[in-house]
Amino acid sequence: MFTRAIVRPPAPNFSQGLTTAGLGAPDYPRALEQHQAYCEALTQCGLTVTRLPADAAFPDSTFVEDTAIVTNQCAVLARPGAPSRSGEIASMRAALVQFFSELKAIAAPGTVDGGDICEANGHFFIGISERTNEAGARQLSALLAPLGYTSSFADIRNDDSLLHLKSGLAYLGDNRLVVTESVAGRTEFAGYDQILVDANEQYAANCVKVNDHVLMAAGYPLFAGKLRDRGYHTIALDLSEFEKMDGGLSCLSLRF
Ligand code: CIR
Image (tube, rainbow, N blue to C red; front, side, top):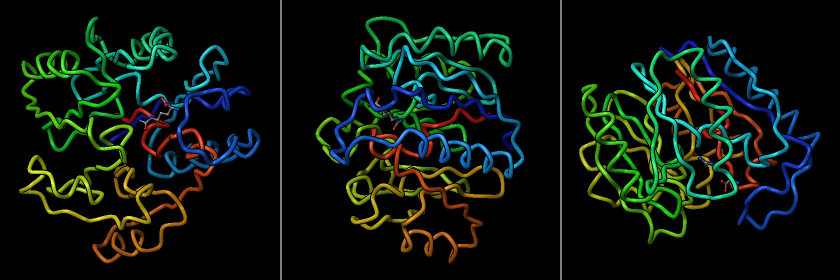
């Protein structure tokens, strides 16, 4: 069970963050509304939500999931692969020390974006991507191992459809993964029950199981139906303004 989440609303210069989406500039008031609804959904799932102040020094800082890996035993500060995001770590450190007695950290030359890390019941899938390098992946694996966590790597550098591993992968519990087509075919994820996200609904793959609900992006009826058919209670959230900045649902919070 999760009890807490950390979020950070977008700053007014949110549109100056990194993006490849080609969907146009985000509408700031609308982004704030969507973020508010996201926070309310987390509250509905039973979480106490800590809202960090918006930080215009880092336009991508609303994507807090990329800055740390949190487990039920520890937190690991990430080391973002995008240089423009490296300064986001200091304020996340200050936030996390309130909740974790010991903070670990990825060090140079390693880079890790939290969006590349998918935990599945004590096993960590670590994506090696344009953001997370092999040195960072090995460091994270070594930090987690003494705590009893296992890990494995998935190299997604040749997969243009994925910014981060979790752009195409989510874990729902009960040995069940949500996968996009390109992720479904990979041997790393064989042995799991897989819910396939249709190619024209790929954005929906980045969903999050929070206690008794699955939070998912609104506007993806096929995927919503697949979840409902399997008995999940879904909460659909409009994330259009975050999608314009390459952001998925999971990256708007750290949950623990
Ligand atoms: C970036 O490119 O870093 C941000 N504009 C979006 C990050 C989204 N994070 C994620 O999917 N984990």
